Length: 373
Image: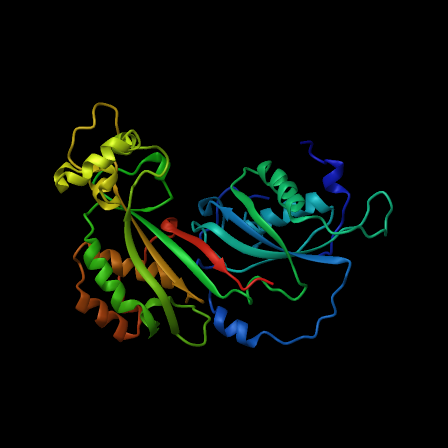
């Protein structure tokens, strides 16, 4: 595809450098006060402009390559790079609004934003053309994003009404946090993608701690200074810790053997004891422990880590809430804290009672949920 393909650039839009180092002080990974902002959003009567199409755009990105998602002067940000790609596509600057602000180092499997585009013919200035189909928008914007390092990509596009706001219309947000446990140094391929914890983690204790924290609480102990939310009260709909197979890229020898099992092997296993069961009957946790255990893997084979994922789901989160929650859960997993300590921290209603905050690199915005028209 050429730099300025005609079928992509026959457009204009409604209007609105990369630094040598990524700035360290930026906006936060969790939303500051989505609930209050949604309730206070002014009810302005809108007269739809038939010339303008609003698009809802889902994006993924590697957070360590950016100084956060929100646009900032003299910093490379997700919104800045995305606006630049849209500008090259339609020929004029646009304003992009994200559903969730993320900090430097925080990744997104799916963040959502909206953008308004007015398509005007370049050959006949002033002639309004029908809006682009979402697939055209996705393909064209990704074309320009790929030319700018490809560390943010569009994964979905949908046409929405002119009053649909990516931030205020969000009903639920899900974050994931990755922890890799084990004494081995972290793989190059996992660098800045997870929190490396050298100690063993007690996943059962961490799951018990989740039961204390999930639900409707005053989370003052789990919001950082500078939080803009008017109230520390939040409803945490889900908080869960799961152990998963640690290597997401290539099959381990156990997984390869499992895939080679025949139907006869599976049928014969029904008459065998648990110790004789085929590998397909072993749980994910068992396979992860076996893969990361003490078996000699042979020269040149890196020993892996036990991999854990914390899932946090709510309508909105406080400033640094997820990372503070993970910090406490990790301390429970390493037996630095007990379940009683978690209850004490929650009831203390001050962030000074909490454990050190988990680093940004393990946090992923996983999903933003809407009631789409």
